[in-house]
Every structure is written in structure tokens, then in C-alpha cells.
Image (cartoon, rainbow, N blue to C red; front, side, top):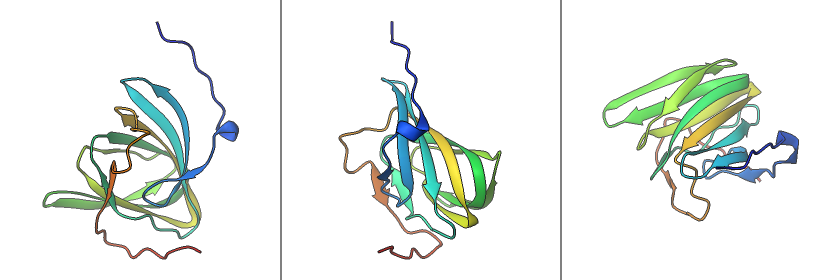
Length: 134
């Protein structure tokens, strides 16, 4: 039987995700999934990436932006705003951007994000140019 777990966002260490967003990993269920909080600053654009082994479900908790997703020949850009929930199936190339209000979302990753992997997120080409931050 698994132990109960409780964690507060304020206690989570912020790291930079491979796509350039600020991420705060929260909890994990071994073999099942992991949960994290993502943030893009106002007008920031992520790097386009795809994942090698994980898929995600995102839920926007604040702000606005856009999400571009591509699987093979199929692609779309969706408006992100508080209350938007979307999936990023395995192998999907995606890129997101924040408007002037910034963007905050939480996401479930299944299986759990592989902590020791340096090649889980594979950089790809997306529709938006990324300004490198100093």
C-alpha cells in the first residue's frame, strides 16, 4: 500500500523544463504518473518539443496563450485560457506561448516523468520563434 502524500506548491523547487518553461514538480505515483505546475512569463514562447516516453494532460489555471500541436500531418493551434484542458499524446510535437498576462498550468504526466533521462524531451521545430533569455 502506498503512503499518503501531501505537497505545497510554495515548497516545490522551480526548475527550467527542456521547453524553457518554469516547472515545479509536485507529486508522483510510482509507475502511474507525475503532477507538476508550469509557468510561462508574459509574452514568453517555449521551445517546440516532443516526448520520448510520456504523454500529458494539461489544465490551465491562470492567464492566456496558445498551444500548437502536431501529430504527423495533423496540426492545430488552440487558445489557452483559465479552464482549458488538453491532451498531449505520446509523440506529439508541441509548442506554447503566453500572452501579456502570462500562463500557468498544471499537468499530469503518464507514466511519471523519467527523472534521470536527459533525452525525454526532444527539441523540434514549431511555428513560433523563441527569444533566448539572458
